[in-house]
Image 1 (cartoon, rainbow, N blue to C red):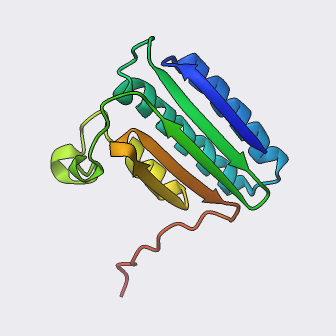
Image 2 (image 1 turned 120 degrees about the vertical axis):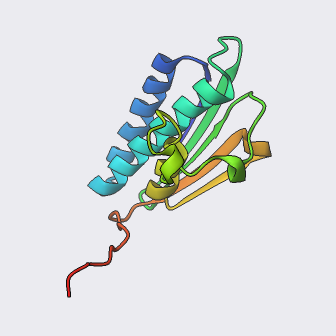
Length: 144
């Protein structure tokens, strides 16, 4: 099923989009881990588009397309802002950035989605989540 939205730079409108997309994900019988991942990544992407992309300008819109099948969810989010260079976004896991109140949204999107790609100078995000259980990175044990 394909969903298309053009919303104002408004967080309530973003939450409505999130609710409707997640409803479709659940109806297409996604694994619980995938539902969680999509909900989280979509919320972060919408907040970024509204807050950072459009700078909460009520005259600017956010365009969202979501194609949901039983195998995958592909979501496109595009704002009307100036864009950004992904390579210039500081890593929130490094020491100087650990206490910053923002900067983790992109990291979460990239961690929880199967793929995340910024296009059109950073104004558009194309993210995909396959309907598979969440695989967390393995950590090395310090026992020995």
